[in-house]
Length: 232
Image 1: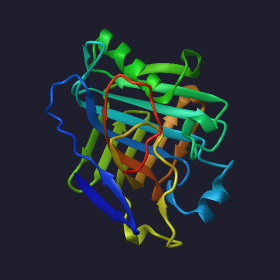
Image 2: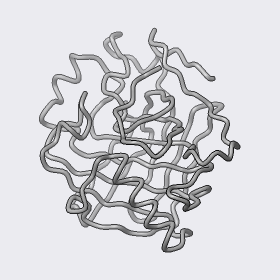
Image 3: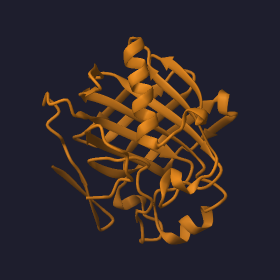
């Protein structure tokens, strides 16, 4: 287990036994939103209702299968557009939700269907809320040693992230204020160094460079109902 102390808050990022072949879905995860997540109530209250309605999430599977479909080595990303700030209750805070799901172009038809299903179940998305399912040769990397990450979805998204540090504090009251938008085995809040997202099907384009808007994490899950993550 790796522990990181961020401004006095202990947040754990578990390193799962990624090589286990027990069928559980394991891997790494990144998330970025249009509101601050490593922050304090003073900043968060100023953003409620006006921003934080968009997000991008991505998973990379180190191993595991979904109903017998092997997902090891594949990636899936989701771009979200909602009508409310995604806060303490995550997507439950929004009445209107639309998503673009991007599946790994290397996946075959069966794997693409499984990736779409995984993403929808993790976020509680209905079929009618998914505006598009696209395929892309996406690249994703999360370094569990130095806690940096990158995500590149050609023509759609570019993220460069790092864990939050004490020097990122402004009001000295920062914490992982809003939880991640999906279930994780461990996570740290982060800074989006570069963050550009274009989702034409959603009519959205946003940029969040140099902002405290990210999460870097790991997941270790069975086929079970999704849940809001809690810091360990």
